[in-house]
Image (cartoon, rainbow, N blue to C red; front, side):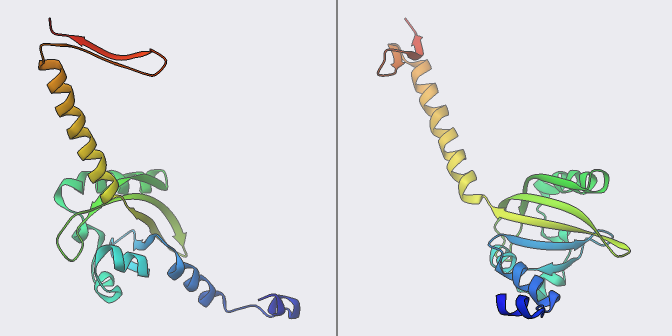
Length: 168
């Protein structure tokens, strides 16, 4: 690369950007704002959603958005149209039918005469599963403590009381 720069030769820019997109560890989807059809999908998007690139490019964003996430999609599209960006959590239906929850960052970009939406997605399904399990455990623990007939006190090593309940 330095030899090319020293000689003034530059790599073909399209190939350079394609390499960057393909090497990205996060799923990248580029969507036509008018039709919501996918126009670019990288390898990470193929892996996350289970569709080949050809299959993805035959679909649109609405087709892969499960019912409970449609209001989120609508809010994201509105924010993209008004503010040019959106960040949040949204689910997708991969080819296997399970729902994949993602942390998404989307940006509206003017490309010539059209506007495209660039979505960068990070799978948060496992994180959500762990958080939900933790919440269920905490709810069960709290119910057990609050329905008990004993005095319960949780304190730190320095004697700070963090939680105390007495049903007596």
